[in-house]
Amino acid sequence: AHSTMVSGASSSAPGLTAAVVPDEESGNPSIAPGALMQASGGICCIDNFELLEESSQNAIRDVMDQQSIMLSKAGMQAKLGARTSVLVAHAGLASSRPQTSRKFLQRDQAGCAQMSAHVLAGFDLVLEAGNED
Image (cartoon, rainbow, N blue to C red; front, side, top):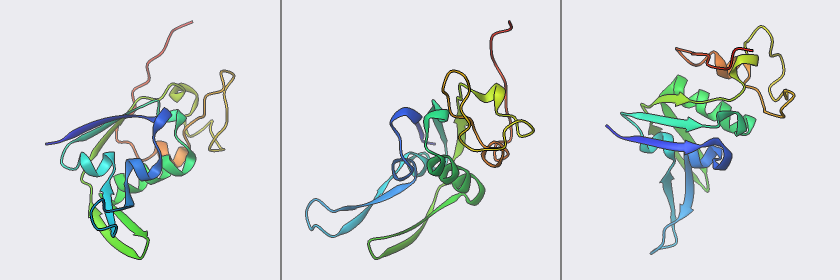
């Protein structure tokens, strides 16, 4: 089984799923696997999930639901397997419960983006850790 670890601070939807890039030798379009595809059959750990753009969080949810990546770019169309378990760390999870988070990128007082109810519902297990004040 494979595993990957990425940071939401420096990741994008193509970097997490797949991208079409020119082949180094021929210049023809080829598929560059992202972290979720590379971890197929294993686990992809994503730190700072709250720093990902809305589109990237939604792309991860889609991969979790479909266990595949649909790629349609540069004249290429492909369905790529991505049977990947996803583990995320999210700094603002305590305040992003579905009953309190209606907008996708609501900001808390510290400026952290919150996870939408739709994305949050895609996870089988949510553990809340934090400081007790």
